[in-house]
Picture (cartoon, rainbow, N blue to C red):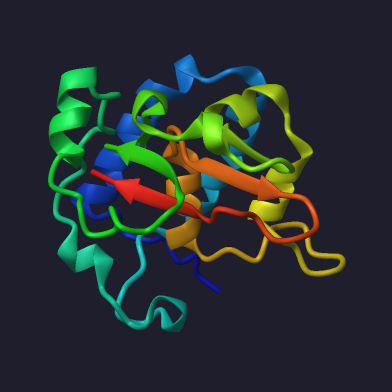
Length: 181
């Protein structure tokens, strides 16, 4: 039987090149987790119209080139990005502000996070080898790989500061509101 080789789209090839250049900057524990996620993506590629788990959305056709990950915004750029996000201003909540995928602590209400709740940027958690990261990729009993389709593994390879709010038992008061710019 002949081996089947996936043909890489230009976007998939570009993402692979970007990952190879970015991986040098990852801490060792981060590198292992990100490597696992990205190697799985390389084996499966972007979801096509045949992938039921992605609701048959053809990302292979939709994504034609790979853009590099966004840099952390300056304070002024972050303020400008969230200036128009007023839809939930009347809601009394702890605000977690993300711009270009990066947690902006100065625009977040981290000092108002309720007791029993912690917010840890993903890069920090990966650098510390936080055991809670395993909860992001649940595994079936006896499975070697997490139950994540490729479209969920790719962001795991690239994530910058995905804030991971974690609460202990009970309800948080006030609730947390993620704000993206």
